[in-house]
Length: 504
Ligand SMILES: [Zn+2]
Image (cartoon, rainbow, N blue to C red; front, side, top):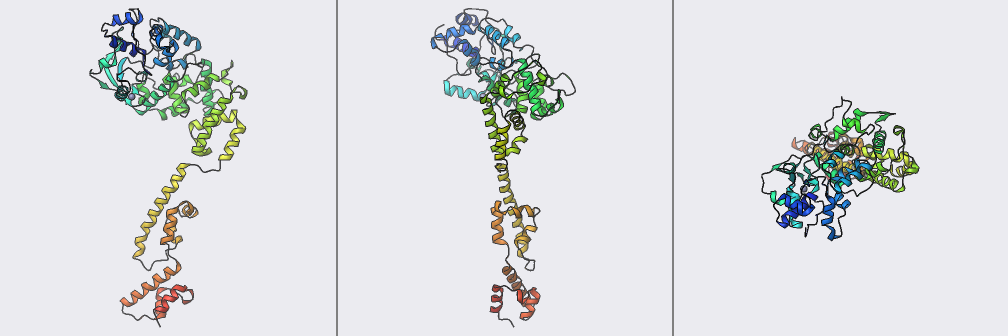
């Protein structure tokens, strides 16, 4: 075929073939198969297509798009590849290169998986707008077709078309041709979007080695140890369950067909923390990673698992320092530094992922960890705490202001010293000790707290007003006695005012 279209970033090969049909004006599905694959038996497969070699051949003139590149960047293979054995991965690539006749889905466990593949065509209306602006046409994007998830990792709910790819096995539907069809919007929730984001991160992982089943076994065993969820060989499955349920609602897990029954001995969650005898789906791995290692990227986790040196007896496995490469140490150190700068040493350890990181560094890089922590222990860098002080400042000032009006009408009350005002607060001693962190409160006290002179004058004036109101004569000794002031203790300014009043 001349001018076979070049795949757009993250476009499914299925979509590129469909566009080829539109470009050439080919309406017969069989004719399209003839032109593109030179084979009328090719099945139009969305997720894991075969005959990739024929497509690489069509794109030969571009000088790009090797078979491997097409499989890793234009199919859903990358969400399976980290979780299957090397041998299986090799076989899968062979099958996808040529003809597989459904064997690829069996090989990757798609057919037998708890995660249901839904083959209704679907799209994200928001992504569609962007595609049109950028490329002037529409195409099927990989991230709309993660098995079990029907959400766009960026925008959420997808629009579901009433067309299943399995209905016409040899037909490649182009997105543009279906846009006028009746549509239904799928339900979306933040947990599904979170999983879709995780899946799209898997799509970006370049071709590389996958951890073996033994390495995955050790990885989850270590995870339980790091989070103190194991005692010897015993794994605390109930606590693992609690943690997952805290992160993912039961309804979400049910929607994914990954519901958990803590009373049953054979749930997928229990099995993933046991010896791996078969592969687990990307969603099962993802749910655990997002519950425990939310700050780590999937490729970091996969690389980490791939580096685990396993021995025959996996359950007594511990990481040996000599095995750990410097670059891994550096990554972990940087992650820990970042967490500590943000949360402080104690705060970082309270985070689930922080605690695991701490445990890992403690086992593998103790001197560095202790040294770094001691440097950062005393520093108060917690922004939350700063925020708290500011809030506390505002709240306290409001409380203090509320004390004022009551005072205005009451001239006979006690002296409104800073101490007296602070005593009215519930947390007096905290406020008193931290006035330097509370600028508003300090300013309030400076302005409104009564000095001794102000207090004496207030009493003096009040008494004089009262006496004149009752038409009593203002004799000095009467005024002083009624005001509760002794001549010896009068401040200089009060004496001055008293003298000016010329009382006898
Ligand atoms: Zn979208």
